[in-house]
Image 1 (cartoon, protein in one colour):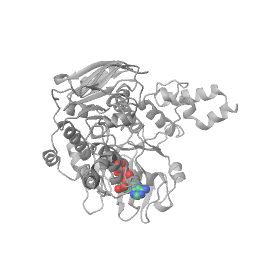
Image 2 (cartoon, helix red, strand yellow; image 1 turned 30 degrees about the horizontal axis):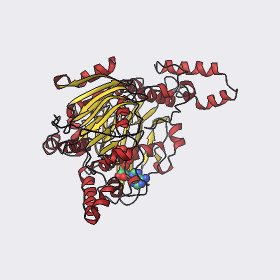
Image 3 (cartoon, helix red, strand yellow; image 1 turned 135 degrees about the vertical axis):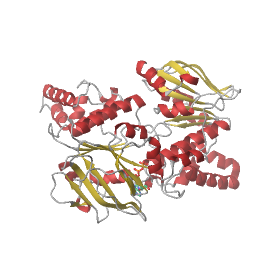
Image 4 (cartoon, helix red, strand yellow; image 1 turned 90 degrees about the horizontal axis):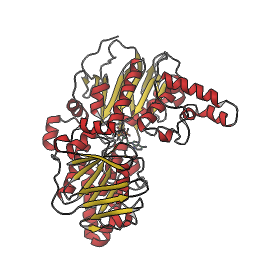
Length: 529
Ligand SMILES: Nc1ncnc2c1ncn2[C@@H]1O[C@H](COP(=O)(O)OP(=O)(O)OP(=O)(O)O)[C@@H](O)[C@H]1O
């Protein structure tokens, strides 16, 4: 077995085979090509995984990461010509003959973003879905189910009660439970290949660290782990090797070595990070103007217990949830989605009558829900149409000229948000997840709102477009809007917000600002809330 060389950057040449330091090869996929319509979205790509390593699969939105994973899972067929070789398998298998059953037989396990857990069932029932059906019919005893669940939980070092409902667990705990479920039938001491698709995308930073530590532990126990993520900090902290896809080709592969987040950013975008920083517009924290922006006074709902908050025009204020989804509920209340039982909400010095979202929108309020709650984009319609639909009232007012202006705004949004492919006529559901997220954000930005309510605006979005989204929020507030952003990415909040408000269970905990507004400070407050 060859020892690792430095990271191989690949131009038009195929990557030299590299295997992790002294580790046994787990899986090698070669010549992976996939064409959906015209141009291939993966082209002659190669991926090598070893037991005992955490391997990051990196790349911009639409670079082909999910497609690679789906091919390995046997749920999307590759074009002819590729092979996959797994430990214990005899010869490399032609990828066109690879199937979900083959993948499972060779101990490949997949944990998708939608974890596939049933929220209203218990931890034990979710671990053993089939057995729990038998238990309901009296064919298996509950005490046996509970004992088996306790064994699995102990084996995976999970401090969860077998009878707890999954809906009461944190997202990190749910992800760990999904991992335990995926792995529990691999015999103790056995080795699996575990693939996790953006497992930390929806997690607050503290929970993300917890999950990444568990992932590291699984690798140290001998499993091979492949993880897709846009959070480069966790790659630097936890991963051993990387493979970077750029427009469907492997741009680099090999040990992480001493690469920094900036180095990874350069590999992903193909642009030197220093150049990128010079061209990206700075988004300094915003101070806010003197006029009245958004003001909440003593706001009460079924879940909020007297919230006071002021966001001036020109100001970006971050909201962090330490429990109870309070930040999200504040946004939903301002948008007229939760019933006010006390207090007032005003915008520009005038009270908002929050009967429904239509009224909020008429007052210039825009709301981007978190991904889990997000209404789907309109399938069957193009990217441009999806962007334009949000600004229909402006069309009606302005007639033809406005339509032309809005069309060019859609084309502009596609370009500025680096939607890939950069084609406003592409069908929106053919876009990768991160690109759909960019379209969702763009839809609200073209309305030029007075008040922006954004939940996890950069979730699943690649490094280049993240900067663009924050720059566009900064543009909106420069134009006089007030912005409230709920985010689990403390780094982004500390960088771009003037103030960060931490809530827990319906109440205000603290507000961080100035020199006190740092990532460790946010994490500390959340930890103790
Ligand atoms: N069913 C499909 N039909 C047509 N094109 C598709 C389909 N699924 C994916 N694509 C295209 O394939 C390309 C790669 O998408 P993929 O989902 O693999 O990207 P990704 O790297 O996972 O992106 P992200 O970081 O946004 O999740 C994209 O250009 C996408 O538009």
